[in-house]
Image 1 (spheres, rainbow, N blue to C red):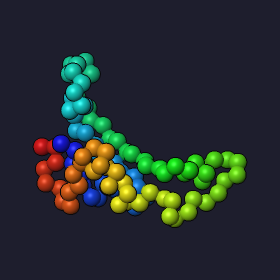
Image 2: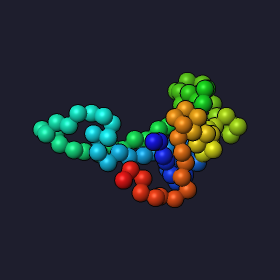
Image 3: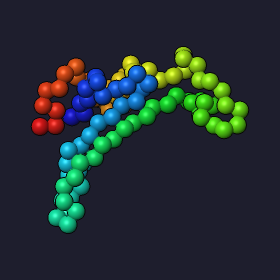
Image 4: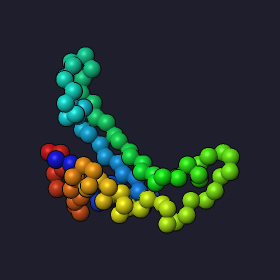
Length: 93
């Protein structure tokens, strides 16, 4: 049920996807609200990533400690039993 394209993943370990209709999430339809879509962007960080973002004693996060595209794809496959596709083939249709 969970399918993403390889191009949805960035080199920094982030990925994004969109949902065409919010009722796909299992929310009951309300005519006053209407139907709308949503875009999601997921940022994966390794433990200790805050070292590069904090104001005091900021340090550079090493290349070995960063989340890569392959790490993000593997996390998605393991955590959500997702499938990663190479090409778009009517996803969500």
